[in-house]
Image (cartoon, rainbow, N blue to C red; front, side):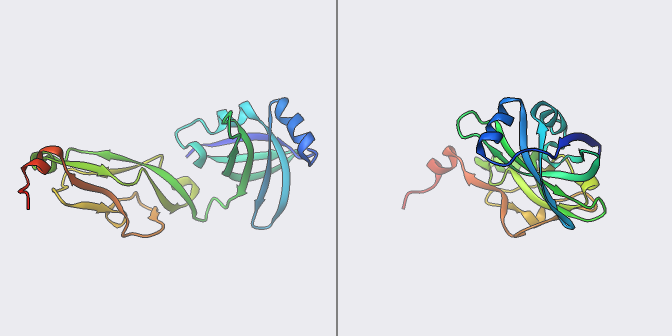
Length: 194
């Protein structure tokens, strides 16, 4: 996993008026927090932040935050957006230990062809589009593939059935469905009416 460097300023003023002025100048207010770190108000250049999280890892990118000479290894955990413009209004940077697991959300991609499902005039119904996982920052995958080739009509694939890369563990309820099947239009009309 690549690690990007992002510069931050720590001398930002607190309050709504200074924060509005900061945003108008192209900066995003934020806070650095985590184990062994007192909450530290910072500001980062909006364009530099977009560039930092625009890679394959997205918001799961490991960032070296240079806050006026002090380096923090962080991940962008909570991003608040403007309700109308959808621009980033505030970022929470969590200090992480590169050797300890963190819990993050990664996208799910369906791969393969559910031939038996199609032949039974059923449809594949993706129930979850992301998965909560725990892994060391350098082991976080960009996405997780879910193979639906062996899926049968009326069957499902649960969180616990998803094959994950080494060092990655599913967080949360392993019984939740990721993929299910449902009767298609042809299968519904062919079913006997009671």
